[in-house]
Image (cartoon, rainbow over all chains, first blue to last red; front, side, top):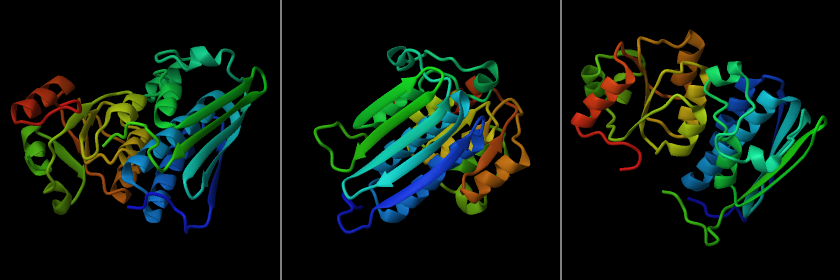
Length: 155
Length: 116
């Protein structure tokens, strides 16, 4: 398993996610996972990245009217960025709280809306930054480093 | 136990999965109906027990390296969901049993949860 990609060219994967485009949001995570497996990344790193992508993409589909997800593979890290147009987040700290959700009944019936998306993303990221403007939209930047820098690795 | 043995124990019907898949062993199980909890708690190579039958279960199963998915209460996913599982090589089962009974039977036979 490769620990860093010093000799691999940088790769960017981009996805467009529309309102309620739940299937596409799920597909993003599956497709990126398969790509990263072909690159030979460690399984635990791939899983963290796939979880971030799944939750972030699903947030766009659930809460925004449109958005993009960009995954950028660098030699020592992967960055995941979502940028959406939508209602935005009024209180980011509150949104980060486990169990807090603004999801509709339709979303909860699908198995989402547990209010764990952002906390899952935070748990899996080495760096996380969220910016939002009510009535405009939200940008999320998450980074996963390949080398464990004092972080407890899950097995 | 193997997936084949689990299938018999849980009186389950195979929706997709060939003999090669069914011979695989399973020692961990997780029962859940929330996708975010699946992403948070599933250990690799687990049997996932769920009432959800939508495409997101397959996405979550693929992301989390689930060994097989069992739908309880007689629930069956759409054909498109079965096809997605087939292409991701994830066996699917359905049983009339409910979650508690499935978990109890598996636990008695030595299958354990994700925290053990």
